[in-house]
Length: 235
Image 1 (cartoon, rainbow, N blue to C red):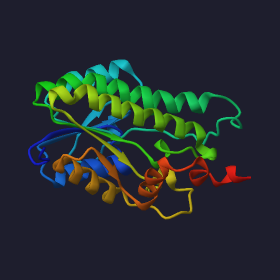
Image 2 (cartoon, helix red, strand yellow; image 1 turned 135 degrees about the horizontal axis):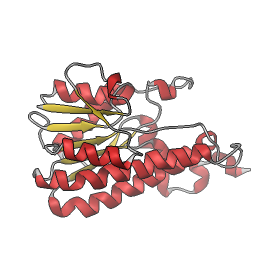
Image 3 (cartoon, rainbow, N blue to C red; image 1 turned 60 degrees about the horizontal axis):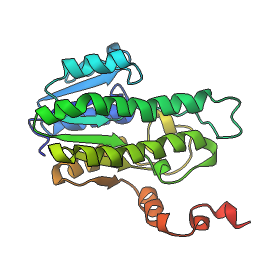
């Protein structure tokens, strides 16, 4: 599909990667860009249309689908990370919150907007995933689990929406230069570059974006022995 003339909704659009997605859509000629945020007052970009949207709130999701009935492109960007290992975390609160947002929240938005996209000709749905969808990182084990679930969700939704002609794009990246990765001293890809690759893929009809070297390397290693992805298992 073409970005120019499209009507888009970006979740978690008030900062970081979400704002980069929204700005890229404006710059590519989208007619309307709805910017979802828990607090719409945090959407200060005058080119965007603020929408109250906490993706874990069923009432918010339903209201957004009713308000944004002209959407042809959905970008599921909203996500959280609580730096929770699976076993060493003091409680399950972080893991539950990550799954509620990164999996169940994303699924809720997909369910609400699938008929909207279908009614508007099919369009496209983008899910922002992670290299952590492909492998688990011990220090963020529960985040990795939630993103693995979101990857499986993306594949399933793609199959279910094929009949209505909706393109479903999964976007994977390692460390992105946003607040979420601010504490990490590793090479990072810029949000602008992730957005560029994502919308290039949408316009080209591609199903998956591996935005950086880390995501490409890890995806390529999935068919190898587990010790390749997890050297600590070598003992």
